[in-house]
Figure (spheres, rainbow over the protein chains, first blue to last red):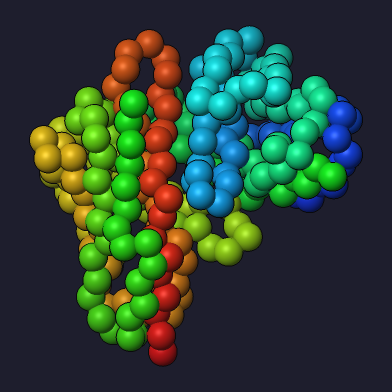
Length: 112
Length: 115
């Protein structure tokens, strides 16, 4: 049982490039979330999704785009990467809303 | 806006000691409170979830309490072991209505258990 996976695990890109981070879960959980973790800020919610084709903004959505055409996938796209988007990105899922969230291993993104 | 504070930021103890990690939050309108551990370079592992109607939850050597009215939670670790060394994160799920089941995280307590 793979659970929740993220790819790539590490990514280096340049300012202005488009980058897509992938998240896949095998549990058929309804809810999926994207967080970023930065020193001094902790974990902050970027976007979340309550079901396929239903997404909404979190605390820090600017510069990011999400989609969820299938229940198991929740990709996060940085349309034009900036240095301030250098961070560790975590995807999470939960079976229903007010439930335990299960986290993926993270993607460490560096924007040069 | 919900704010979550964890004290202390770092804690170092000898093996075998019992210890308490503290978490406080500013808005008592919550669905639940969750404790996670994070090992260096890894994702978060869920430890305990306490519903807003509950007072405590136990799992093995871990016991978490919740006092919603005062905005406080504690994580008690009994008989600590070197393998418990990690960052412990407290997160509160707000009850703001709709489908926004957002977790607000504290910045964590870095625990080191020395052999």
